[in-house]
Image (tube, rainbow, N blue to C red; front, side, top):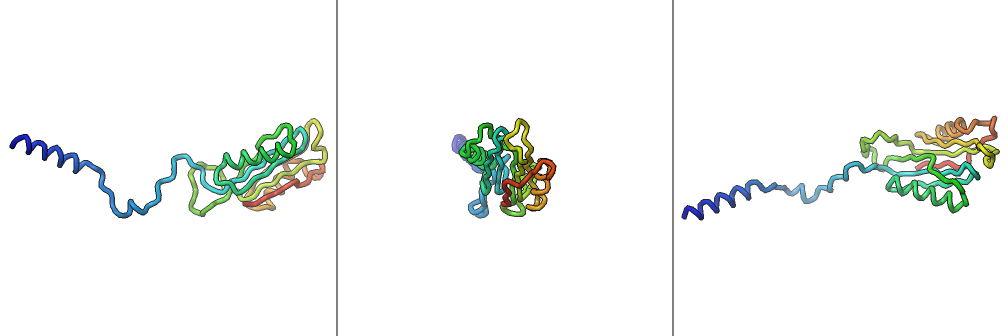
Length: 156
């Protein structure tokens, strides 16, 4: 009899210590993985050696946007392509992931007339609006003094 009582006490202790859920646990979405960067991602890749570029926007993941922009630049026969700007837009207004990476909806690439020179003039920027992104890219390129033109822009 003592053995049964002890066994019941052990079983009750185990049962009570099990985590209990509720109906909300069955319908709640799983938590986001730690460190996941949220948003709609875009990237610009540029090859200063030959002035080739690649753009991509609308990716779910940052790495996806970077890889696609690089691939587009390389497909354009860019010899030294690298990602020069990464940007993102909110998927939902409350999706701040706490990483500090800004939500800048637009990006632009400006390239000077001498894009094939030893040290080409170019600029890539992202901002909240197309106008701001274009202005910043032009400024980084050197503006009219370097005969810079917007090669491409995008807003996600």
